[in-house]
Amino acid sequence: MHVLIAYYSWQGHTAKVAQALAAVLGAEMVRIEPLSESGILVKAAKAMLGLKSAIRPCRVDLAGVDHLVIASPVWAQKVPPYVNEYLFQVTGGAGKPFSVLVEMRASGAGSATRIIRTALEKKGMHFVASASTLENQVENGTFGDRITALAEAIRKG
Ligand SMILES: Cc1cc2nc3c(=O)[nH]c(=O)nc-3n(C[C@H](O)[C@H](O)[C@H](O)COP(=O)(O)O)c2cc1C
Image 1 (cartoon, rainbow, N blue to C red):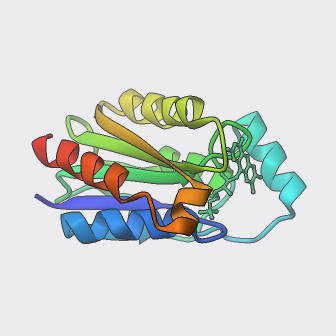
Image 2 (cartoon, protein in one colour):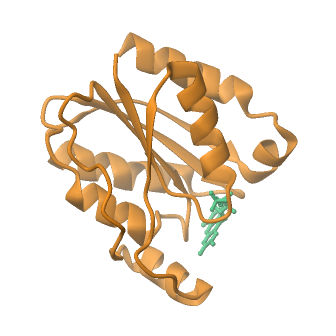
Image 3 (cartoon, rainbow, N blue to C red):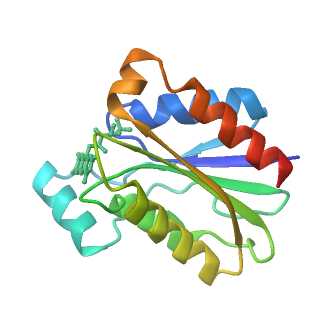
């Protein structure tokens, strides 16, 4: 099964969790990268308003992909504008399964997951599973159980 993990990470936590999941599943990873940086207030405001921000060209076509995972930090109880842009650009997903991994300091996993889920379901994809991790679990290296459970759900489809 070819799993594609598309992830955005500003400060490295989401990247670490996404890499751990990729290692378990033997997945391909694609990093969602902003075209240009902005200050934290602009980042937070754009996330809060559900806006998109330009990203560098990256793999958005799901040809040959059997399962898509979106891995994102929670920003303002939502997702970063770069993740909104990726969700907007992704193509070829109709009929395919997807899962969601969100990373946060304390709260907002439910609303962030819902945003990703709604965007991909609108493209005809179907939700399989989600998981969330906490910043301190990533820093302590204690998020392994969550990754194992998510990987298991993804394998089962
Ligand atoms: C603009 C901004 C908004 C954030 N909003 C939230 C939030 O609503 N809830 C939360 O638990 N953490 C929030 N955080 C914390 C991040 O989700 C957390 O630090 C996460 O580990 C960052 O992932 P990264 O290291 O991959 O960038 C926010 C961080 C930033 C920069």
